[in-house]
Image (tube, rainbow, N blue to C red):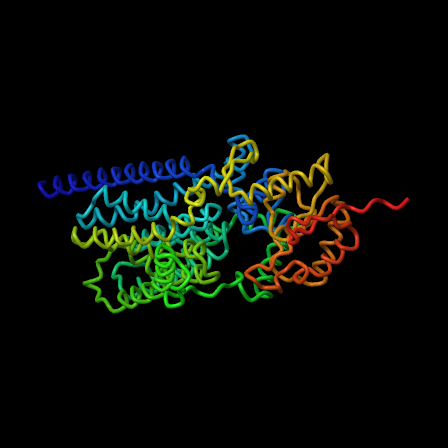
Length: 531
């Protein structure tokens, strides 16, 4: 009877602690996101990548289908954004950012829960430490339009953590479902999640004494993947034209043989010490160090997990899950080695590090976590929208979809130019063509693109360009704006070289408008019909 009473009290205490951790993590994540939004929610605007997301959400609200009707990532992020924007009753930039804030809060909440559970199970729970962890993770949640990718890596870490804690058939199914649903938002996340899952499944088969048979575990996981990926499967089956567009997008990846336009990795030893300030030199050294830490820490952690004996492997499940996911997500960081992509691949490393630190002695835990916090804030402060407009002479206020947004003066000038050109050459909602890098122009002016391509980065075939020309003929834009810019300093990525037939068509069928203020801005108006 006494044993039963003690067990009941312990179970009640655990449930009470779990509920307390959930409340604290929810409150902290919500508080951090609200403060961040209040500080920089109305600062900054990106005609490039943020415009790419905004345009897609607007078109979904108009009944169009991602990939089929316009160039897009996988559909999940657009349907999430469009759903939240529809509830708020607007299609503007602030409605989009609200949808991102909610997704950010969910990701941060999950990350904090993983750390809190590890600390609680090892008797090292600390609310101030948890808050510091939240601030560290929030500092890396950039760029704003990539919140989906950041949060999804945290969701996958949580799903694999649950599997490690209790490897039952049900949790194999849950892990698979999370992997499949992650692929609905981004197929790369499905691949990373699958790689992490296979690693965990293999590890459990060797290290865990309580597990289902491998065949049953794999079957349950695969069934979960199919269920999680079912939104895509249903769209392929039921939405006319989506299936061919979806498989074409996969074929294109094999044709390009890459997932991104690569940049050289900024290793610490490549930093230029001669022409930078102390602060910038320190930042570049830290950026290179973080790039170095991803594969090294992931590889070391996996090796450590393999060699540990069964009786001595009682590590936090979140640390194990994060360690296995660190290497796959390092691919994301290295695919285009800048700070934005580093941030998108760093969260398994952060969760693994913070989870491991949470169970250390107080002195070691706080010392190393403060070092990580200082390094994180030093790197990310220069890339936060609020930090970029800290000097008021660099930014100005401008109206974007009914909201007063503080943006860089060059961005404000570009927005004014687009509005003036559309008012003069494309009044009454006539079509405009903007290429190759500013899909946000369509969102800003609430116009649909006359082409499928809204972000023309890659060289495309003759047949594809001819199809785009036919779309342009059908939509009859009266204004064309070509940004003649060599991306990453590469002349081969200029629009005239990636889409030569389309560029020639514009030159032959539109009339060039002189704009000496910026020769890179090629402005064309529709030719007057011959009398």
